[in-house]
Image (tube, rainbow, N blue to C red; front, side):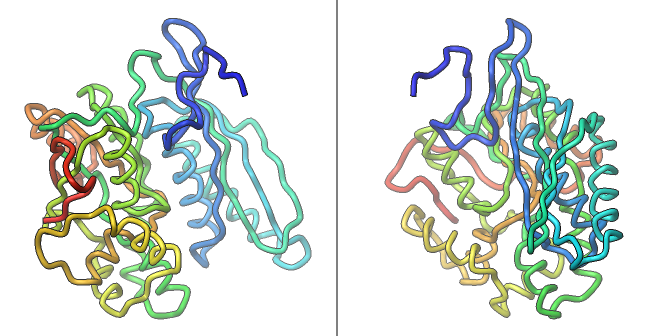
Length: 314
């Protein structure tokens, strides 16, 4: 297929969204995502699904403008009030993001699925991709991880309400402020942490940037309660496949318990941003994030020249 010269970011890489050139000041950012229910509460399911969909635009440094609902729902099996709550949760996140909902499409399906098609804008010269990390950069993670093992445990009635509430708080937090501030600080690369887990998305950044990422495991933040559930090996199949895929690309410099590597590969929904930032800007960048309400953002590692492995855990 012949590539359109106006296509600035397409399917050739593993970027979070596509980008299409409009003029010297504007480019369209487009993405689509939907998920099956990860929560029993339909309101929070809708809110998390919406936040998850919008996040791809934020990861590119863009500003989301419009959204379309994607609805799969078992008509006649579940009461319509469930769908109403899913949409209510989504609309609350859409409104929080300042997006206009244009409509959407629905089909009758045996399993509920929900998400958004989101369109935004970004300056053509300020697109932040998941490649471009430079040796000497520092790695910043804006949200704690562990939502995958928590929601899996909750489905099996092995998670306390307090731990689940903590995960919902993380998943429903928009990456809006983190994105805005990373653009101001001219981040070199970024990606949002979703289904491939922290290690999977870090691997994409390392390979795309032709560098190695060194991650200090002791600095990676976990959602309270996630580590206890990980020790019980309550990971979903997707998280296990993530670790099986990435482990050959990892230089394990220190002993790391299996439940911790499991968390590092844990499939996330609506996770935070992993950002590669100039060392000189990192401290003030994190302070700015904290002041804007992104209070759990932390430095978790650094970018090194390309080595024998794309990922180094120490």
